[in-house]
Length: 62
Image (cartoon, rainbow, N blue to C red; front, side, top):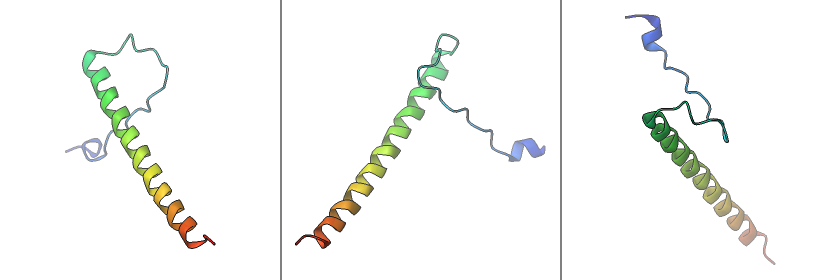
């Protein structure tokens, strides 16, 4: 077993608006999956921050 087998491959960053013509259908589907996962991650963070903000506002309401 090589050392390279133990180190996870770095995932390339997705360039928004980049050229898609050289990507295969499989690569495009992987890209869609990665973007959907990122959207879900961002939405979850927004929800968490919104909850924190609402909690803080309720404490400081007069």
